[in-house]
Length: 247
Image 1 (cartoon, rainbow, N blue to C red):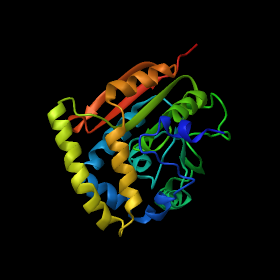
Image 2: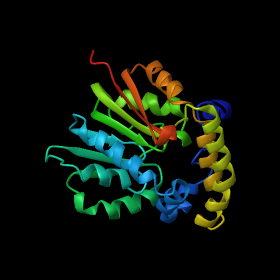
Image 3: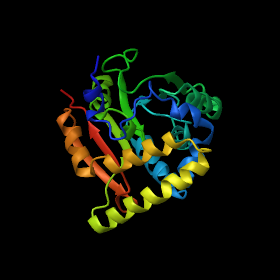
Image 4: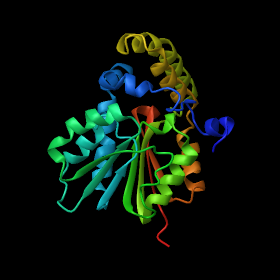
């Protein structure tokens, strides 16, 4: 069992879902929350990462933090061959229930599973061709999630991550963080009907998440190769890609 300190060591938001089912409480308002916090720009980020995921060479994709199914829907909007399969997973049963309704028309391609991205014993080692996680890594223990991603990927398999990042220009980055620190509590209080924990975790996760360069280094340390990243919206978020070695 992980100790309290170790459990938080790679968790930017210091969030442990077993202690606070905040995403279950706000599941019905989660997409609104994303719109409010990003002023709708998250839709562009999701469109970009969905295009990247769909463009990779895979037969089986495991998505580690599906949430309400928004990104998987966007992946499916691209041409998906009949031989492709998607395992859409999330730790929150209420978030998955929404995803199940939204993805019902794609039941032949998408299988929904309630999984903890930090430990997925039901997913066999080297069993998927691609692993994606979007806007969920900042509320997880990154070390455990990346370990699991490496374990379940087949040799040569692809990792695709969309997550908070850093604006390279320090003054602009500090201005952005100050703005979020001021506006997120007010907007979050309205969007979540006063559930303070929701925006507290998200704000901490954004503020404490490593830079794009630092996250790329962490991914390499986990054994991945061909690690690259692309900043979006000046660096508010970044898309990271990597490959598990073929040998």
